[in-house]
Length: 137
Ligand code: HEC
Image (cartoon, rainbow, N blue to C red; front, top):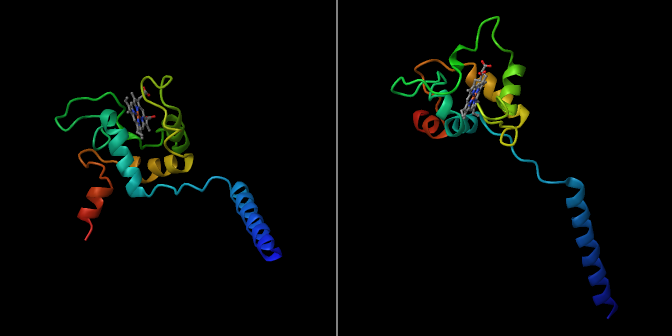
């Protein structure tokens, strides 16, 4: 009888410990997106306005609604921080461009700016995870 009781309180203690641990640890950290995932994100979310290569033209050369991202450089161009702010907060209350702070962390946005948008070249489509893995050998 006492053995059973002991086992039960042991299990109860264990359960409480796990619960406490889970509460202390908070929600599990969400893994930060890889560069390939960020590229895929660009393809899904930004192409419609900024074009496959970032030049704000569709493959037929028709002008899209976005800003040409292949011309961000130059000493008078916007800073990384400025671009991150625009992507996170959107443009004109989200009407010209949606805000992406729910979809991208600040760190991911900064990497998107530095490793993808800053390197965008006209006529070179920004490739996603799928194309990268088939072109890598
Ligand atoms: C609905 C169309 C639309 C979508 C979707 C969109 N944008 Fe934009 N974006 C715009 C417009 C329009 C502007 C220019 C606003 C202005 O400054 O007049 C802009 C501006 C920007 C700028 C600022 C450029 C500069 O010179 O300061 C960046 C960076 C940018 N977009 C990145 C992105 C990224 C990254 C995505 C996807 C996550 C995205 N945009 C999705 C329409 C869009």
